[in-house]
Length: 385
Length: 169
Image 1 (cartoon, rainbow over the protein chains, first blue to last red):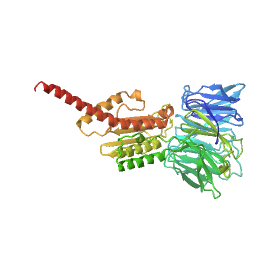
Image 2 (spheres, each protein chain N blue to C red):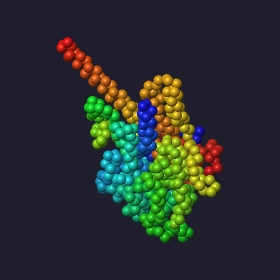
Image 3 (cartoon, chains in turn orange, green):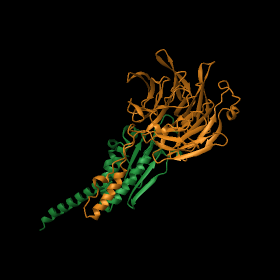
Image 4 (tube, rainbow over the protein chains, first blue to last red):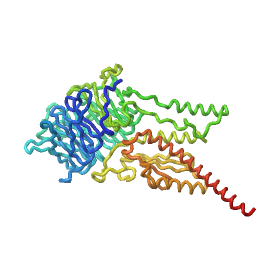
C-alpha cells in the first residue's frame, strides 16, 4: 500500500504545510487558527497555536530555508481596512507574527513562497494577485498588485523555479503566466531568455483550455512543463511555456481534482473529490495519460446494480412478484477511496529541497486526516520517476 | 412502473455525485462574506448549467450547482385535486421545520414542490454519500407518504359518511 501513515488531527483541515525537517506540521482546522504539531515517537503533540486571523485561514506555506510561515486568510484587518496576512518568524520558542498589508479588498485564497524565499504570491477573490517582498530599509513587507488581468477569483498560484515567472489559475477557467520581476529584489539573468526583458505584471501567456473553473497549478521541477486541473474532470499539461506552448488535455472518468503535485519530470499526482490520489505519467514521447489510483479502492457496487435489474427481469419472466421498491431498489452508494473519507484538497511534497524527484508526499482533506504516501514500493510507477 | 422509478432515481443519484463537488469559496462581491452562490447568482462564472431530469410531465427534478452550493428542486406527482392539497400541506409542514433537516430550504422554487439547499459546510460536516442517500430516500418516501395520506383520507371519509347515513336507514 502506498499510504505510509494516517493521522487524524481535526474534524476538517483546510490546508497544511511541513517544516523544513518534516518534524512539524502547520495546519488549519477549518477555523481562524493555525495549529502546529510536532511529532515525537509516533505521537503528535500540539506545540503552538497561531491565532491572529479573524476568519478561516485559506493558505499556509512554510519556507524550507528561512523557516518562516506565511498564512493567508479570508479576513480583513480591522485597523487599516485592508486584507491581511501574516509572516511568522521563529524567535526563540515562539512564533512572532508580522502583519503584511496586502491592499486587497476581498479574501486571500492561496499563498506560496517563491523558490528563493524573498517574495511570496497571494491569489485573492478580488481578482488580483499580490506579490510581496521584503524591503530592507523599512523593515517591512511591501506588496505589489497584478490587477485587471483576471476575470474572476484567483484560486491558485505557482512559482517557476527561476523565481520570476508566476502561474495563476482562476475561476474564469484560464491559466495565466506573469512575470514578477521586481527591481532591487530580482537580478536580471542575462541567459534567461523570455523572462529577462519583461516588466512586473506583464502577462506572458494566457491558456484558455478549460471551460470550467481551474485549480491547482504547478510547475515541473525543471520549469519546463505546467500542469493544472479544470473542474470538468480534466487535467491540462503545457510544455514549453512561452510563445508557442504545447498543450495536452487528459480527460478522466472520475470526479474533478483540486490540486496536483509534480513528483518528477514525468509523473504528476492529482488529488480531489475522489478521495484517492491519481497518478498521471508521461511516456517517452511526452504524451501524458492517467496511470492508476494510488490508494486502494473499495470495490464499487456497480456490478450489483446491473445484477439487480437483471434479476428483476428474470423474476418477472418467471412470474415472481417483486415489490415496487425492493431492497436493492435503493442502490448502495459507491464508496470512494479507503483512506480519505472526504475530499482531499491539499497535497504537499515531502522531498528534499531542490531535488527533482519526490518519493514522499502528504495529502490533507476535509475529513481532517493527513496521510503520508510513499512511492518507493510501487514498482509499476518507477519508470516514471 | 418500478423500473422507471429506479432509473429516475439512479439518474438523480449519478447527477448528484457529480454535482456535489463543493468547496469553500468567499464571496467576490462583498468582503468577508461567504454566501451560497447558487442563491445569489451574482457571478455567472461561478454557476454551472442547471440540469432538469423529468420522469414524466408531472414529475421532475431540477439540480442547479455552483462552486459552493447546490440546489435541488423536486416536483412530486399529483394526480388529482386531493393529492394536490395533501402534497402542498405535507411539504409545507416539512419546509416550515427546515432547521431540523439542515439541508431543506424553507420555500420551494417557483414551479416546484420542495427544494433542498446543500452548501459546502454540509459536505464538510456530513458525508457526501449519506447526503445523496438521504435525498434519494426522501424522494422515494414522499410518494409513499402521499399515497398513504390519500388512502387514510378516503377511508376516514367513507367511515364518517357510513356513520352519518346510518341514522337515515
